[in-house]
Image (cartoon, rainbow, N blue to C red; front, side, top):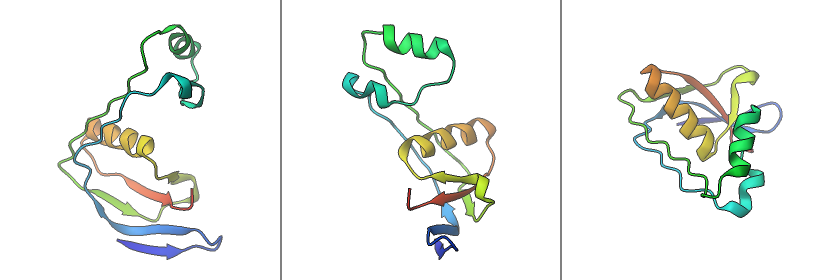
Length: 107
């Protein structure tokens, strides 16, 4: 993996390969529900507030092709957290394709 310091003083992952074998997310505790990202649709918000069961988010992905990581335009910079990685892995798993990422490691 190759890292670089950009003009704003943020360390960026410039190039390299990462293979995502499996990403699993645990149930989200009820008391932190207000901090959980929900779809902007009203249905998603209503379901989250009505449900008595703890919200469960599990994503498991197996990628046959490693993700190619390279420096992209500013618009493509994503925070490197488990939810972003899981979402990206799920999308790539569906497409069975490679994608380009630039992660803002200071986030």
